[in-house]
Structure formats: structure tokens, C-alpha cells
Image 1 (cartoon, rainbow, N blue to C red):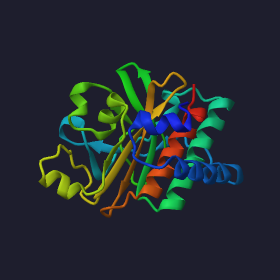
Image 2: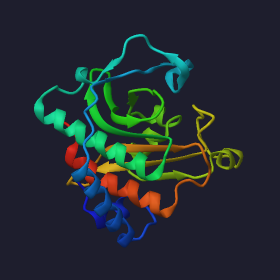
Image 3: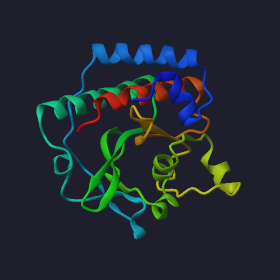
Length: 221
């Protein structure tokens, strides 16, 4: 887990340390007072051409089983419950339309980002961590660069020539932030999406960063 002061510099976020500390205190208080159940399976959408984006409104018949990738034991049950509680905190405080926590894990198909906890519309559970996939995925760009990506006006960003693969046209702003271990290696990300532009204020970014400071403590084995 990256220390709070380290996280700002590692992720290259421009937020005051004092604001991050305040939001971390609020987050810890929420975790202490609330508990969400672990989610071991969830519905996932069919993938579009090329597999980069989800086909919204077209769900796969069978749910995705997290237990195929994470051992279902007491320790991991508690870890996933904590992560879902953090998701609940972020959504409740900010009103963000979609929020998810991903861990970089080795799979039979290679190293991938695995979605561990989330709130919002069904979405893909795995993202291949490859340079090729980074061309169409903010998630993979973030985990490969280990730097935060904040796009507060996606329509303007795209119109100005920015590279962005639109999956859900309702999303007008997106923030992806890296997660770090004690050795400052990037071990996952968070992804937050909003249906309104200029959503990610300094205060909300500080709360998301606070979540990134705390999440590595609860990642499953």
C-alpha cells in the first residue's frame, strides 16, 4: 500500500495533501460504521466487435463467477466485503454513476484486470493487460502507466483529438486511478464514471484517492 503522501506523487494527481487526509478520515469512519456483503457473482454483458466494449442491454445468460479466479475462503470473503463497502461509500458520498475496483491478477489467459467490486450497470469482468488493449481502454492505460487519468469532459476531449473508445454514450466524465503495493508497484485500478461533465471536483478526486490508499489493504490473495 502506498502511503498517503506517496500516493499523490506516484499517481501524479494535483490534490492537496490535507484534503486527501480529510477524505481518508471520512472513508475510514464509513468503513467502521457500515458493512456491505461480498459479491461472488454478477451479471455481465455480451462484448461487442473486437471485445473492447460491452453491448449494453445484452447480458450473457450465465453470471460471471468470481470464485473461478479468487479462492472462496473466509479471508477473501472479508476482503471482498470491505471492498464492496468502499464502493458503497464512494457512491453514497459522491453520487457517481459507476464505480469499480479492479485487481491485476494472473489468469490462464495471461495477466488481466479482474473486477472485484462495483456499483452501476453490468460491465465486463476482465481486461487483458496488454499494450494492444491499452489503445481502447482507459483501465489498461492506467495500470500500465501507473498514473491517474482524469477526463472531465469526454465530448470535448474526443473533439479535440483525444483517444477515447466510447462504450456508453451516457458517460461524460471518467477517472481511473492506480492502486499500489508497499513496493510502489501498480497492482490494480479504480474506475469511476459520471453521466455529467465536470463531475470530478478536487474534493471527489481526493475521496477517490483516499479509496486508492485504503483498497490495497483489502485485496484478496
